[in-house]
Image (cartoon, rainbow, N blue to C red; front, side, top):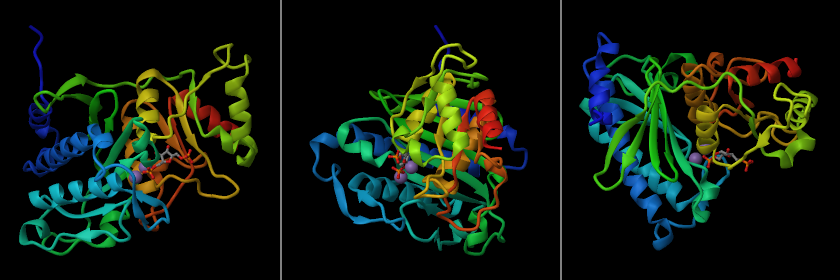
Length: 333
Ligand code: AHG
Ligand code: MN
Ligand code: MN
């Protein structure tokens, strides 16, 4: 019989990757794993419950309408991370400011977490894949103090872990701690994640491009040129690429990670910095992409090199197979 490895076993077996770690990072990942199961349960029965489906009738700090599941997921991840005490603070896409946990245990925590609790909100009510994205940094402030904003405003290159959960046709948790990317599938009947995709490598080139092409006329000439290259028969595949756009970043990214492809959210005339958030969406997926052999760029700069200026900062985002992102960069120059 094939030996099966649970996520819990895997996390513990990899603890040695961090020689000075005392297990806090493992415990933190376990908190995320647990909260994700609770969110997954609600996602699966969303259509049956008015408490979960639909708008929360309020806006988040970014002026976006919050869905009930946005708020619910945010509460679940916050509560799980607070309860463990390994984390001194959390910043969430759904909250204006970061939260410092003021307990003796949390003040002694070494890490901060940044999170997009529910990605793809517009797909909740129509039974299409959605996700959660998280990013972990070592704090820069002194242990024993409350978390400071500087703990959260670090370049993506400083991440110690990043991952996502995709609530899709099956639920998967994919993460990296800087030693490759590993994927785990939830066995729903017993509520356990099993290692299903060890050492994920992104194909160097692919034939899928993912972009909201409705915005085509607002993209800059380099991006338009790349999209025309994707559509033409005179590309490296000698036939048009396939356009695939779910509108849930996690789901689009996950498909392209496994099959090879590129995801783009460029700047537009209306949104000169694009739509996606550097700290909650771009940095964690950039870290995963690079760990899997892919690339992530704003078109002008490596995403992981950006020094963030504010929590909810947005950046143009091109992520995916190495050769495809390189081609976009060359056309944008
Ligand atoms: P969120 O639901 O966390 O606000 O993120 C939505 C993001 C991302 O998941 C998706 O790829 C993108 O917005 C879709 O935007 P458009 O509808 O503008 O294409
Ligand atoms: Mn999102
Ligand atoms: Mn979100």
